[in-house]
Length: 476
Image (cartoon, rainbow, N blue to C red):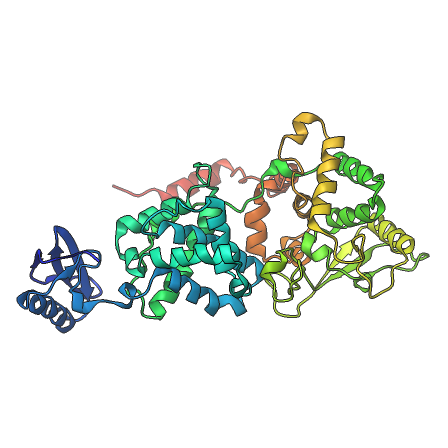
């Protein structure tokens, strides 16, 4: 902790605004200017008086905080590493597996940027793994192996205090580290935005605990300028009908689990559920019509999601985590209609697999939840086999999730009201429109016909035109 006796305290600056008056205490510590605004003059005078008394007693000031040593905050007494562990333990029970994993990633990079020295005696990958997989995992920390414990003890001894955040240069250095990938290139905008969102929550916790007085992260335009992202779907990722048919046909011919995977991808394409919702469905969640019924549309009842997060991040030790639907109330469900083509596929799939009502609709080879690695491998193999090289290298259907994007866009392009599409998709209408507005196409001719049908302004008769113009003329 660097201190100095080079301190100057100035008079209070009074600013009278249209809504309120602000009283700002100004002082300089080792050439660096500090300001502290107050809403009440008495509070400002009391704070300034404390600074003057400290200088009169010959008390040293902390350069990093601009305050007398006697005014040391909790931020100077606790290391960042210790505080980060406290934060993880406090939030762990309320967090989902993916949230736990993302927080660990952010805190790992932040902690490495807030060390007094670089841990050059350890392998860089081992250091990051020790922090991400052990230190910031409340379930595994106590079971860390000996080599990991050695690394974490070194980090504990060399971690800077939380007060380091009060130095703008250090805060900028941490943000720069979060914005940079391991290969030195800039991280994706969505990654940078996620890091800042997580850090802002951490800082709010620090303020609530009295460790920090203010949030040191950029605010307003400074915070959004470098993290601006768009949730709009890239139109190039959508599949046309011929491409979708060819991909599903190739998957069906796979020698290993082809028919089961064909039914899974057909469900994604025809009904647009999220992949983690589809793998959680049971046979009883499918309402199939009678084989002799005239209406052969089926219905899917979606009520659970099982995202794949990794067994080290779940409380059950399972790879998948059972959750309620995204953005819905606890226990909420939604019903989605299934095309007659999907009815035929699912009916045949249930019969071939001899599935019972309580069984998973799309089980893995061992009867458990269908693994994400199997899904991605099958989809990539189909794209590589079916699509021309230039299309394979393009965004067209690159992700399994693009089946959902394709279906929701098609519903909108077919004229289904956005409110209904949002209900089937499990989105809000604003999110749906913001995500898929750029993909809506093919409706311009119909819209032009509607505008033409509204007609143009009528042509007035000559005498009516003269009267009309005369009525609006203003005499000089």
